[in-house]
Length: 218
Image (tube, rainbow, N blue to C red; front, top):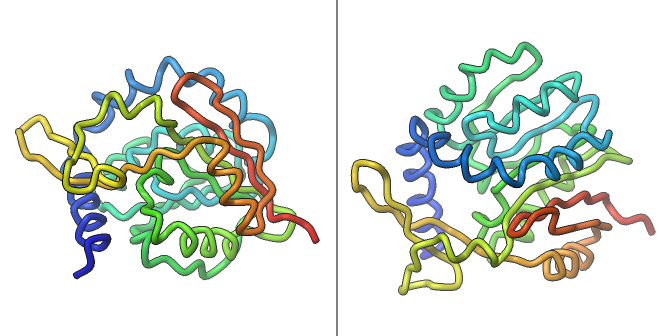
């Protein structure tokens, strides 16, 4: 098993184990940045038939369900999906899917993901975006929320792979290694431009970025 595969497996194990306690820490963490993020999220792009990746406990799914006609939400953790399903959103369907083994079987008007791209290691970045490209209909849009290097201060460094991994500890004391790659708006813009995307990526709150990307036209 490759180092990358071992790390992403540990990451999935962590989020499965954290599902029931996730919102306890994430909601107060996200609340200060939420207003400017919602301003962008509600700008009018995430309408029609929307795909959400790494839906987690449904924190963002609730907002998407108010904007879109239909939302398809994918997550690798059945435990996270169980938490998200408690919101009982009538226009949302959930599906368990390992996003590192994901090949879209259809396309959508828009794709959204939050706090996921930092969990994608560099050696899987290009393949992930190739899958995203196949998931977007012509004229569609991809929007995502993530963190900048400002948030590194909150993480427990993993000395074995400091550029790609951090350690997270649950309430019961269990510790897991997960992927955490901090990328700046400038770096993401450069890399995604090279992959054929036209993006507006802004730091909308200290430590938080919001991106709106479309396939570049020739």
